[in-house]
Image 1 (spheres, one colour):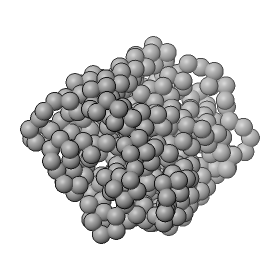
Image 2 (image 1 turned 90 degrees about the vertical axis):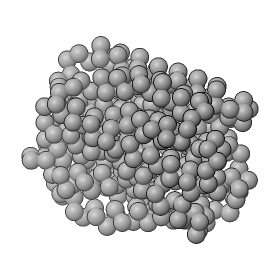
Image 3 (image 1 turned 60 degrees about the vertical axis):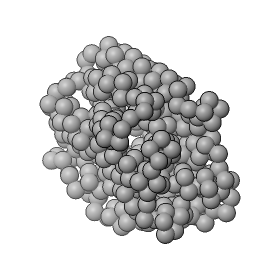
Image 4 (image 1 turned 60 degrees about the horizontal axis):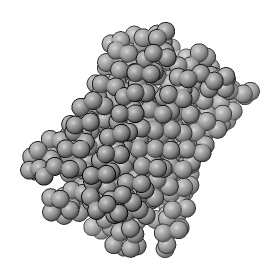
Length: 394
């Protein structure tokens, strides 16, 4: 599919909003954790599974969804994903048991993975190659923007409707974006037929990118899932105050994403956006979780944690199309990267929840999450050596 000239920024915005709707579906488990724990008598391990169940589809179907995007068309796949998020979210809002809720999260996860593979593929089709870095910087905002919105409205919804209100609102968000899809250009995102260029997966670069995404997502989603609970316990905050304080993280991710997009647009190597922010995170993350801190210092560390995190996804999403020797290879690379992300979300929160309960504290979880950051740094440098000829975006 030929890249649109000039970049169709309205279409990029619609694809981005589809990601925001997907993010609200993923992020709602974090502010709902305390309410779920009391309403359904869930353990921390089970709460970790509520967060992770939505990522099962990302892990299992990442590469396959790349094939679907090529065969069915990224435009239709975004629509299919939004429909799944809407229906599964609405049904999960009625869940009488944890098993029903986990099943609904799995279906939501399938919708989310369709969106998160198809939407960036659609954005690539809508963008000039010179604008890919900037467009992917915008796309990388999908998770923090959706998270901030969900965390901002969560206290009101929880107080009025309980956790079920969060599920209903995420379903409504998918419905709103569905109504915007007719605004996408008709000449992009159509089915191209045939098979994807899977030969690219024989190279080391896509696998390193998937491993980097695994390290990033396992660390971030583990902290994000239990952060409101941690702040409520250590600072004596109410559920509302802990949820709003947690919103500092995704709010600070947004300027980090924008800075990452600007740096890539100015010619900074994308792999450096993985390595350099992870270095200060090795200090910020354990300090936030382990040290006795005053509220101002805690809020500062929350903002720094989010800001440095925000730079990293821009590098990941920018590397994916740049690693593709042909347009048909972009889907498999994105799919493999999202499988790595899904595995990280699938493994991280439940494991950290189990460690928190068995070890009664953050010492061992923080050590594990620190190792994930070290792994991210090593992957970044390996990507720098494995892809020395990747052209810099302009």
